[in-house]
Image 1 (cartoon, rainbow, N blue to C red):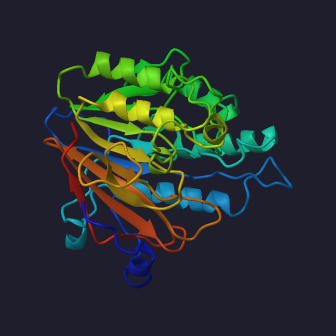
Image 2: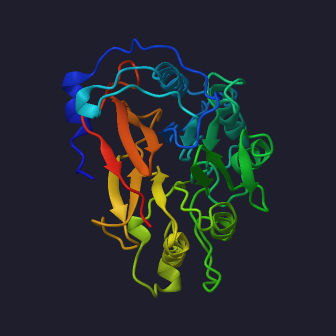
Length: 354
């Protein structure tokens, strides 16, 4: 995978007005060897007005709405040659890499209620009950519920009971998996953990996501060789540190290094087509071999930029295709909070690891 170019420099000269075809239906039957297309967004940070918590902050609602307008219009659009060419295929859905709302880590529950209501109204669930015209598959981030006991986590658990296509849900109802065509997808929340042999407190509660991943891959993928796509919120490289790590240091980290190692170990023997995450508010593309540095060999890994943050003009999301054992990822971006948008002039293509 090639190194990224400057997104902001590109957008300054090549942004184009959005005049794109309408969305195609996401639920049309597809053969298992057909390409599986979807979008990945992250860090939408729906924000309520601090002075009037029953309303959205005036910076937040418009940019979040415009992002969904773009997602709805892109299917069928031409992709320029510098971004790989072709057309945007009908997407199976949108994967959301977390931080759906902004104040889930704060004490103001009224703001959280307003923010989550806006998220649910904008994204819906099934593609027929919100502004988004395809189903959505979200995980929670640190701004949603860092300890796993907040409104956003409770809402995701409730949504998983009727989320389209879900084939497996964790015992606590939070983590889940599904298949699109011949590809298996697993959504694992804020971080993946917790390693059973390390008892110290975690800064962000993993909520048994590692146990679910291990059991789900064994049951739903096994030795089939089926490509796997995984989404969590927090980035890995900063926390993939050599063990042992002392308890005090580890407890201050967003992701315990023992859990990061457990995560990588759990993926051995499976054909992982991609890992997606958000959190950093920047795009990063690399292969992960379990260490804290980008590698030449390993799991194709894609860090999606903030997609509709209220305090940022530059935003971006990924358009992804998985076909014939290969993942292709492109980025669509804006320099002005989705008043206009354009394709980043490059494409990342990789074979699954494993």
